[in-house]
Length: 161
Image: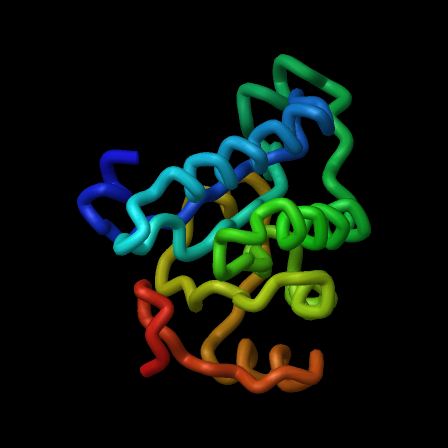
């Protein structure tokens, strides 16, 4: 709430698909929605929500909990759709192409996502945990067009550039 009162540009993220329940996921979304509803009217609040599935390779959680099933593409797409409905007061929902791949991210654009995020110059965190998807600006634009949308370049404030 302090960032909202200071009118800082913020986003809400959620890593899911490890040891939480589906009820925990929904509770998390509701907390984000409630926090967004409490922001002062003349401030930005959360400009986006970015859910990304747990990447377990080489992590302590996978070592501790041996049978963590991965989030399927269908489950991720469904979560994007649920996020769009629950987070009606957060203007942008981002599909995490980095963790789910471009094909799933394309479908997410039809399920409520309106953003595919950014091109990574250097990314070491989720790639070390098993995500191996890569995109350059030209290929991202091609993927968005192939999904039936018009790619637009934006800055971190979601202003078109």
